Length: 255
Image (cartoon, rainbow, N blue to C red; front, side):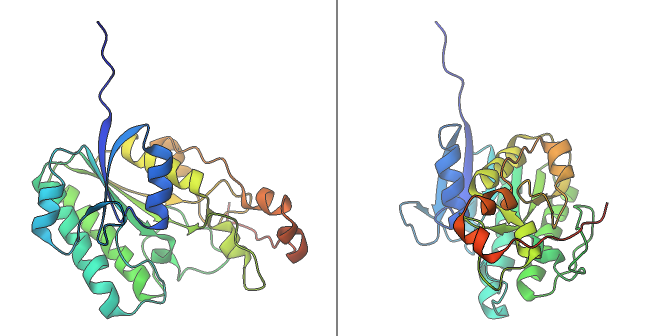
């Protein structure tokens, strides 16, 4: 008598956010997802600033995908400190204490936003944030590196690009914004690859869609983790009236 293979148990923090919803909707059949969020919102309630609550919640999960935190590049320090700084430390500490196999941290391309606009960022480029939000994401990456240095946990830090349900449009949208677009489908694929792909220790990967003109290279995610994005912002815009009206800017990327 055959039995169905047991699903991988994956806990998401910040699961009620836009990225959390996109991931849950697309991967809930593949994984046994434990969706947590500070506000509940149909999720198991978890405040990542509560270290004890994190340790309790992380019991018996294969992987933790840490999406919780303030997502705004314009956020001030007092708003960023609890979730983005203390929360990242608590999540990593709890995952280590519970011997979680894999920790996936939501970093951001804002961690490298001070590089020149025409510079194509690669995963190996060191953090260079242009705002406090990006600095907290650089902190999350540092926390991930620390965790792998003092424990056997595997950590992937995803430098997520311009996540949006549809390609961004409007007079203020730049080629840089378009080149950093990450679609919901590709975002879920990035998280899948970050949880399931082979990793030794700590690694950073860039998270954008398969855009023709790319703000960041995703080659590390592709070759190391098996990330396979399918969407292209320029193709998507050409297929919409808004894209045709506004014109589609392009930019050169470094080879």
